[in-house]
Image 1: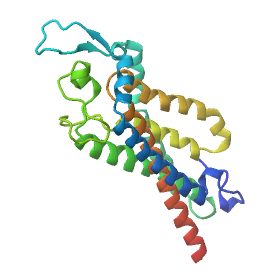
Image 2: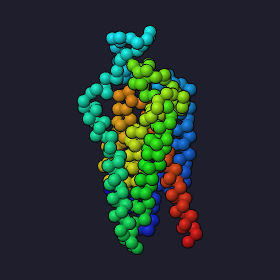
Image 3: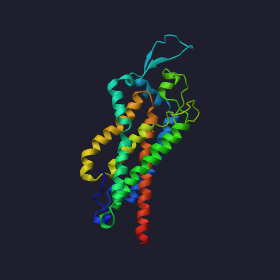
Image 4: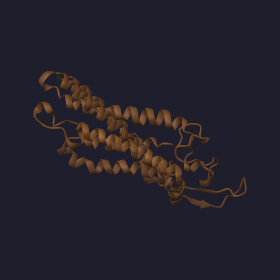
Length: 260
């Protein structure tokens, strides 16, 4: 449950990561890191290829359709336990989001001294990050128009399409493409929740959340559904959006205090 034991109205202080200056600095650092990693993966596409090859098992083509055709599969994608894990994790961020919406409505039912404004702000921050990051930027924009084929769709890993590096929109994928990973972005959003969970509960749930948050994109890479760059940049994109909204929220909050 996302509450707040450090509300200014109760004499507490904002946690270190939630202070305006730290949030702004974090956004700038994460934003630059995201673009720096995109440049790295774009300049050195062999990183993506090398990692994908770790999970790909080539096989002899039964009826080659062209000379030099590569056949094979990503065997982890056929593992029953791993597939069940992926299915269990697939809707987890949106189940959590539904709970957060319910908590926000409960929060708005309070007025005056019983209304916890910082709790409401944290809930809106979390839901806003999910909407802007994984939903709008990743799934409705990048994945729809990037054109980058997934590893298992490329001719290097048993598919039919050409490989394109991270950041290129020249691929021939039509929809639901590889750049960037939507599930990794949702997993990154789950990780962001650690920073707005109160300390007593944070110490109990931070590690499980972090493990699940990292396992989700790892499975997508192992399944041949995404390249390493798709997973890393997708996961990191939610942290960038979270830090941006947090910095904006704190700036607006401080401005209102100064005006009053």
